[in-house]
Image 1 (cartoon, rainbow, N blue to C red):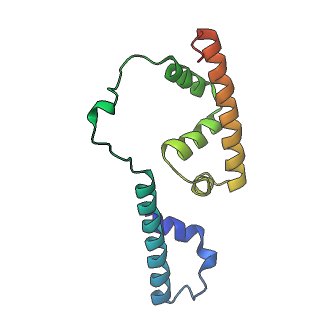
Image 2 (image 1 turned 180 degrees about the vertical axis):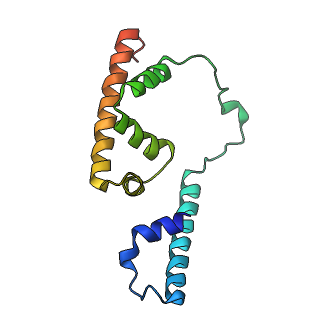
Image 3 (image 1 turned 30 degrees about the vertical axis):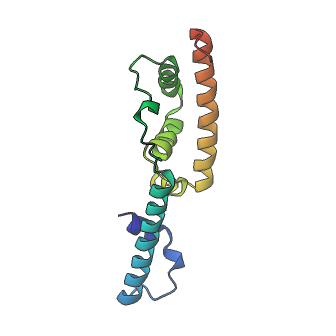
Length: 136
């Protein structure tokens, strides 16, 4: 599915005749292979290095974290378009280019909304932490 989305976004780069099925098929295979290579690179780059000493791994705590609560409350205060781009870009791990295509706006608009949303979120989180006194 990603290969078809990427091919649709970059259809102007196809230098062959759009009716030549062999050329289009090769082009699509190339896009799919590049996406797979990128995915594998991302996996190996972000794979955690395991240490066999289990004593070094801290136990997870289930205590309520004031910072997470402040973040949730601050996120709810954001404008809807800022929530949307933050959710798509960070939680759904969608590139700015694909967010732009899905929302029907330019990539620069997405990047500007992300910048504004991060600034607003930082402002609201700081405000929340100051009022609760949990600033660290």
